[in-house]
Length: 74
Image (cartoon, rainbow, N blue to C red):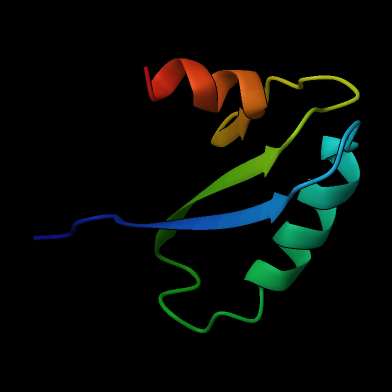
């Protein structure tokens, strides 16, 4: 039986007005260095920052800013 293996790559930039596209591009490049099940895995990406210049809606990408984190911890 075949099962998809999932992996989550996360990066935190604790700065204001972070451009998520730039960080995401770099994180995706770094993910290529992880040798685990490269052709079989389902990749997810998570970015955290104090704030973003814009929030993009891209498949398998999660963005959390300070307001999101505050709301989640209440």
